[in-house]
Length: 293
Image (cartoon, rainbow, N blue to C red; front, side, top):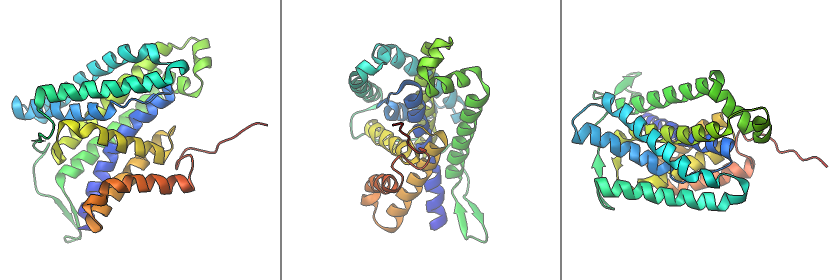
C-alpha cells in the first residue's frame, strides 16, 4: 500500500515539478507568471487523447504533435502578451494571462466537450506492476513511465540551461536583465523562448499525466495551482527547488489521501505551503535575503 502510494506521489510530484519549472523559468526571465500554464497542460492531455484514441495512433506519434501544438500556443501567447511584459504593466500582464487561460480552456471545451465531460487516455505502456523484495514494494508500470519521462525532461532542461547558447542567454537575463541588454543579448528572443519553453514543458507534463487520470476541460487551474505551490515551496527562483517542491507536494497529497481522507487531498497543498514558508520564508532553496544599509 505504502509503496504504491509513494510511487504515485513521486510520479505526480515530478509532473508538478515540470509545471513549477515553467513557472520559475518565466518568473526569472520575464518577472511574470502565466496562469494559462495549467490549461496548456490540460491541452497536452487532450491532444494526446485525440491522437491516441480518436485517430488511433500510438503515444510515440502523440508526443511530437503535443510539442508542436505547445510551440504554436507558446509563440502566439508571447505575441499577445509581449506589449505588457514590463514593470509598468505587471497587473495588466497578470490579468491578460488569466484571459489567456480562459481562451485555452474555451478552446478545449469547443473541441472536446462541455464542463463535466471526462475522457480516459490509454496507458502509455501496458504490463503488470514491478514487484520487488517479495512483494514488499509494488510499483505500477504507468507510474514508472511517468517518473522516467519527467526525469528525462528535467535532465534535458538542465543540459539546455548549462550547455546551449540560448540557455546561457536565459540565465544571464534572469540574473540581470539590464546588463544583459547592454552587452547585446537578444532579450526579445530570450523572453519568447522562456514563454514557449514553459508551455512546452507544461504540455509534455499533461501528456505524461493523461493516462494516469481522467482528463476534463476544467482541470487546468488546479494543475497550475499545484505547480505554483511547488515553485513556492522550493523557492520561486530555484530550478532544483521547483522539482523538489513538486515531489514533496505529490507525496504529501497521496499520503493524505491514502491515510486520512481523499477530501483533504487538495487542502494538503496549502497546508504544506504554510508550513514550508513558516520555517523557510523564501522557500526551501530561495536563499537568504540581503539588504544594504
